[in-house]
Amino acid sequence: MLDTRLTDEQIQLRKTVEEFAREVVAPVSYQHDRDRTFPYEVVRQMADMGLFGLPFPEEYGGMGGDYFTLCLAIEELARVDQSVAITLEAGCSLGAMPVYRFGTEEQRQEWLPLLTSGQALGAFGLTEAGAGSDAGGTRTTAVLADGQWTINGSKAFITNSGTDITRLVTVTAVTGQLADGRKEISSILVPVPTPGFTAEPAYDKVGWHASDTHPLSFDDVRVPEENLLGERGRGYANFLRILDEGRIAIAALSVGAAQGCVDESVKYARERSTFGRPIVQNQAIAFKIARMEARVVAARTAYYDAAAKMLAGLPFKKEAAVAKLVAGEAAMDNARDATQVHGGYGFMNEYPVARHYRDSKILEVGEGTTEVQLMLIARELGL
Image 1: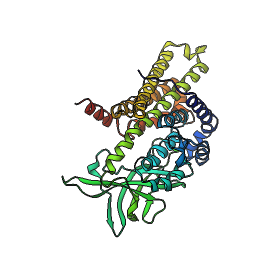
Image 2: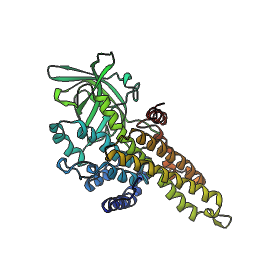
Image 3: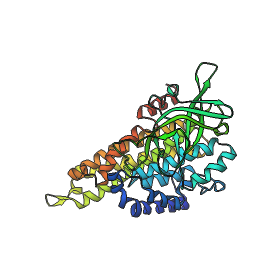
Image 4: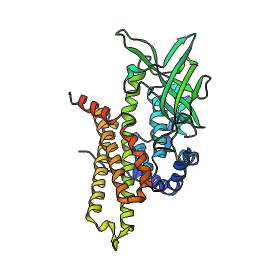
């Protein structure tokens, strides 16, 4: 039976992050969303709190926690601002985690103290215009000659890749051909700045306006041979492991968003009166919010279960896919219902539910679409 009880330390962390989200993040959330600006001052305070080091050992500058503890922090941040939450999620699970999981000791010593401190961000360069879940579509290449990799190609939709504090991008690239004719895909560390590397102008996105997202281009980018991350030819397989973990974190973010919609709806329904009484007294409104809460509980249980199996060293691919699927849909459904509860005010961007409505759609797409999660679940069932 899953034990969902939190330790005293986890309870305290969650409370601390919840207070930070309410008192520091929320007051500036609308402004950053409206102006489409990266919240450097918020990220700086998150760094000071040690949030970027939560799941990493102290020997690399981390806080000595675990991945589930990181998820708790992400959930609390997402209740008020998904852009801030995804900045933390990507900085840890996509930026620093590949180095921790697959790097040499020299690579860990060089990069992890910088990334776990939150003073610098790393990015995860997997997706291309024609390749994401389909590794065979990867077109970026890396050729090894005279002790150097020369990288050419492009990446798409890369989070944390163009900020003033971005210092590292890990890139998947075709480095040869396997015996069976498939592409040999490896992962390579590219420091920022490096000549030939360019973070192109940021995307004009539907949501996550305060999150940094760019297409990337590589034009004869040269890095040393020792910048290979992990075993040659294992780049895509290693990144799939990172994505499995990342789906748990995205599920946590989705739960936070879904919970934020419940919070705002309960508050608004108590304050808003029509025909002489608060709208919360209308059963249709009360039942709508009750169904929203049920989605949150189910989704939270799913990601807790996936995290518990991962930390126990058990297979968790199916559980991560289930959590990501259920939580992403809960966030989108709750955002829609919360907007309905708010009526016309729910269509105004200064209200958090309007931002959740725009932001939550990506939770059914990013780090594996809903359809990919269904495919993974079916495959794990032997279908």
